[in-house]
Structures are given as structure tokens and as C-alpha cells.
Amino acid sequence: MFERVLVQNRAPLVRASSLLAARVMSTGSSNGSGSGAAAAGAKETVGSGKVNESSTMAMEFKQQHPRQLRRLPRVDAGPSAAEQAVSNILYNTPIAPKLQTERHILDCLAQDEPGVLSRVTGIMAARGFNIDTLVASKTEVPGLSRMTLVLKGPAIVMEQAKKQLEDLVPIWAVLDYSHTRIIERESLLVKVSIVSPEDAAASAAAGNAEGDAPLSHRAFLDSQDRLQALRQYADLFKGQILDVAQNTAVVSLNAKSDRIDAFLKLVRPFGILEAVRSGLMAMPRSGNVTLYESEQNAPQASINHDSLPDLSNLPPS
Image 1: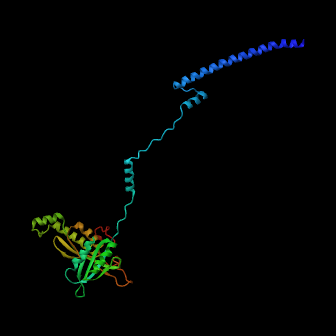
Image 2: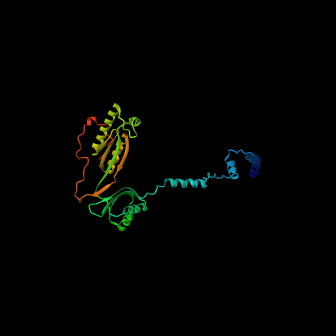
Image 3: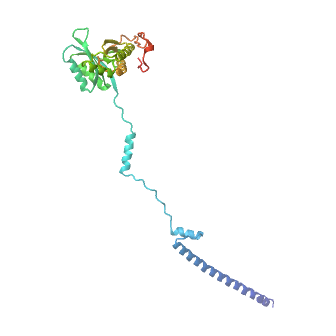
């Protein structure tokens, strides 16, 4: 009896559970069909170029469209770039140093006979040396002459030229004073105009070709002022005025080569008509212990500095 009652009470529970299971199955089938429809809609969306925001659709889109890395732009390394690089390298490369050009002073003791001077200058010209000055004269010994050459050129070539000079038969010895303490002097004769160009032209037009016509009073006073200034320059450089004419004056100067160059620069505004230079004469100093001459401390002639022109541009001694 008890068992019959239990089966009767269990029957409605079984029916309820079966109904619940049928309802769940129908809900799942409806959900499955909905998801299929959503997937189909997503595929249509992807095909149309629009990406769904869901993570599932994003993964599908990445699988269907793999990512491709972008290549960097290539630099054209054609012939124009290579030429530019070579030109930059050549421009920035320092130039190789040239052979050092030095000033050489040679003193040749030779026999006093014709043709020696031409043979010496021929050897120097063949070596490519430019002879700045050349002084040749007799000595105190009969039959012996002395030639002093000042030239510029490389030291290596200079040694070869000296050996060739020593091989000459008329040459007794070749002395190199380039790195020796020496006394060097050069003589200068310069003719300078002491009148203005206008007065000189007027004098030449009034007189003969040499301009011997008398100057006007103003031109005469102006020439005296110029002559006074020229005399002061000559005194500063220990020179002498050897000749004075109405329009010109001749100055003699015996000094080093650089001081002669400086004196010529100072008197150039006057108007240099003629200039003669003797060339360098050199002689070694006597002994190792000697007093160098100091031209700055040498006594100078007393000059009235009140009437002096501006001499601030004078070169150092």
C-alpha cells in the first residue's frame, strides 16, 4: 500500500522534470540557431569591411587578414651618392705638406778666371733655384775671387747643388752661412723726387725735358719741406743724402736687407725714380764669444722731434 502511494506521488514529479528538460532543449536549440545567425551576420559584416567589436570576431578577422610588416624606405646609393661621398672625402683630406723652402747663403771661393760665374749660376739654374742676390768681387789675395749667393730652395736639393759646386775645378771651397752667425750688409742708392707730381709736370713743361726750369715760390717751399722729411728718414736709418737737385735727391744706405726694404716703403710716397741694390754681402763673426751689434742701442743723431712727421709706422730694428 505504501509503495503504491509513493509511485503515485512520483509520477507528477517525473512529468514536471520531463517538461523542464524539453523546455531547456528547446531553449538551447533556439540559442544555437541564434548564434549561427549572429556568426553569419558577422561574416557578412567582415566581408563588407566592417569589423565587429566582440573579441571572437576580432580573432577571426586577424586570422583572415594576417598582419604584414611595413618595409623601411630604401636609401638610393647610386653613382651620384658615391661621387658625392668621394668628393667630400677628398675635400676634407688635408693637403700633404710641401718641401720646406729655406733661405740659403753660400760663399764660393774661386779662381779669378773667365767663365766661373756662368758655370756657378748654370748649376743653380739646373737645380731650379731662384738666385735672389749675387755679389762677386776680388779679394785681398791675387787670383782669388769671392761670390756670395742668396737663394731659396729645399734643403735636400741644396746639399746636392753644393756638392756639384765643389766638384768644379775653379772652385776652391763652398761655405754655407745659412745657419751661422754672420754679419750681413747690403748697399742701396735711391733717387727720390722732392717735388709734387703737379710741380714736376709744370717744371718739365716750362723748361726742357729734364725739368730745369725754376720752380715757383710755393713749389720751392714745398720741395724744401719734402727734403727735410727725407733727411730725417735718412738719419733714422743711418743713411746719407749724396746728391740734391732742384727736383730730386739721392740717398745712400748701408744696412740689412729687411731695413732697406722698410726704407723703400717709407720713401715710396715721395716718388722713387731709380733704385739700385748691391746684393747681400756676408762674413762670419769672429769666435764663439762675441757681442752682437745692437742697432737699437747705437747712438743716433740728435733730431728735433717737434718738426718730425708721424713715424709710428717705422719697423723695428
